[in-house]
Amino acid sequence: MSEQSAAAPASDEVVVIGAGPGGYAAALGLAHAGRRVRLVDAGGVGGTCLHRGCIPTKTLLESARVADEVRRAAEFGLVGGDPALGPAAVRADWPAIRARQARVVATLAGGLETLLRGSGVTIQRGWATFRQPGADGAPRVHVAPVEPGAGGGGALDLAPGAVVLAPGATAARPPLPGLSTPGVVDSDGLLTLAERPRRLCIVGGGAIGCEFATAFADLGTEVTIVEALPQLLPRAEPEVARRLQAAFRRRGIAVFPGSRVLGIAPGPVPRIVDGTATRELPADVVLVAVGRHPATTGLGLTEAGVALGPSGEIQVDRTFATAAPRVWAVGDALGGPMVAHGAFHQAATVVAAIAGLPPVPTPALAQPVFCRPEVAWVGRTEAEARAAGADVRVARVPFAALGRAHAAGEADGFCKLVADAGGRLLGAHLVGAHATELIGAACVALSAGASAQGLLDAGFPHPTLSEALGETAGLLLGRPLHVPPAR
Image (tube, rainbow, N blue to C red; front, side, top):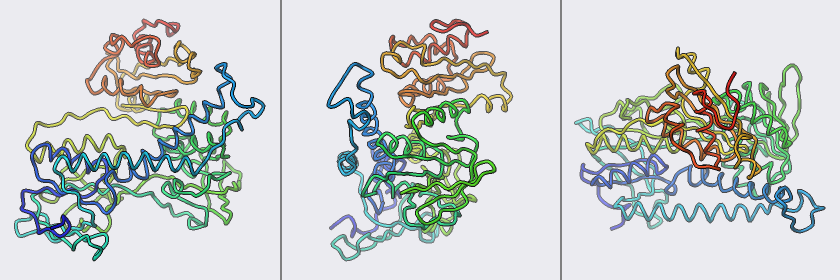
């Protein structure tokens, strides 16, 4: 008997709806804790992150990074091909780049599916919706097959002992005139273009917009970014955002912060208000990247007793339990910071709650942005710390003070630490090469409640970019090494 046509399971089974990072992490954790688990999703395991988000975009960014390094080879004393070609010495083969993306995704998806099945998780392809709870208030779930009558069995009606919701999020669609104009796409559409556009206009200067701006500019596309708020990456430390904006402009990326898109005319041609001036920005493709919206419609959540917020986000308590008995929720559908590592932590908390394991500590979650230069932060910005009433101390050290940064040709960037009067770390902010890797040490420090002294005492190896954290801690404590003391 196939999985899809099996009878309703006994109530000791946990049904996980959604196979993205939060869902598959919950499924694996519960299986390792000895629970029977059924993971339901209409698509492949890995969700948006693996198939249309984190992994495909980072694979694209790696192709772009290599292209940029090849163009810079002469800086390192390397000459190949015809130097007279300059930037044209390397050409982006878009079909080959997309083929590599597909290979990477397929490898990871296959490995993840093998891991899930090997851990005893039943993988169910289908559309899950809630039915009216049972007389005891327990959840009831209906699963419709993705391809009825195609050999995959029929529908299932399940009476699980618990449900974990992880439906994820979809690209937000703002009320913008011309949004259906040909050539206007969201991030999913951009990744599946048959050809690389010559001109790309990005509406939205958040993490998604900045990462795609980096990738396409390095591959030879003329890129423009329009952001309604005063800075790129609106949640980032302002001076970090200013450094990124300056770096983008040096690389030929046109940036219009504090500008409002009026609409998109055929072409497509976005019309924006930049200060008091109205501009037209002709493009071949317009990417609308103004955030993501919880994918909570069509699941029967209200009927099941799951409370939703004003934007459709699932309401949960500190253990990620919903208002419905025996139903938990994790991931982007909660509407908070939409990062996969956040979903992993939420899943671990839910596993502990369902399986009766010790509570999971709350970590300091980093916000990494894989643009160039890279940006990453964890904890509070300086303004947030002051608004919370802290007696704030800050220090910043430029990457130009690091020997490894000069050796690598990556001296543009800095590290900023925010601490209270006693030296307890409140936030860390990085812009520069490998910032998304370096932030991990700051996450450990903040999660452990460490002080600047503890960071200084860590003894970062020399010569590395990670020394930026130790150097900045030393400056904050009045004991700098490779930079002058603060005045």
